[in-house]
Length: 218
Image 1 (tube, one colour):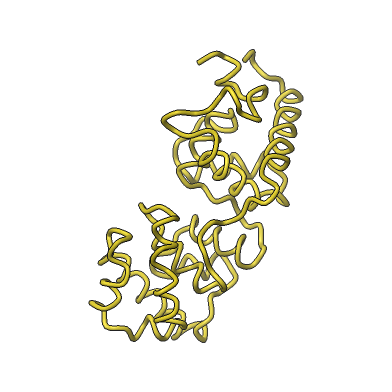
Image 2 (cartoon, one colour):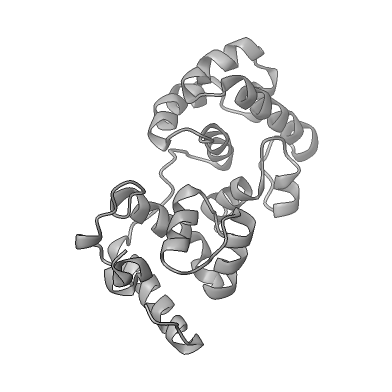
């Protein structure tokens, strides 16, 4: 695409947001959960693991450990065995228990609602905190930048960065705050359903006319 003016860029971004909203009106977090604690645990388990695999593990896990105290008091080997198939199960079990111990000791067993408090928990970085705040509490404090969001943000010309923190800042500067949580869901769904990393379906892409890569013929 030719070099964009600020006006052209803003107009294209508006078109991208509308195209994503229209294409994925029901986009949501695909990690199964019923409350903030379940989402927190599921998000920790999702590191380097598919949502599908996590969703196979969590129904039994949530039934066995319904509270933060239950995780904190569980025998480590038992918890490791319950989450083994998600990979890196020893580190994940350690993080879940340490996180839940902090919830019990400092938050009455409840998941806190602020970025500062969440990122002080073991196993919780900014990306996980954004998931919890946006999905569980409806608070637009940032944009979740996973591998799909990072890849599509670059492909759609919304950033040139590769570091998640810088990508998030670029997206937050350009996209209205009211769309921050939905933007991550939209991009994740588009990355999984249309713009896959190995074989993007550009021919049928709903955003093709607004995509710099497609328009350049790359």
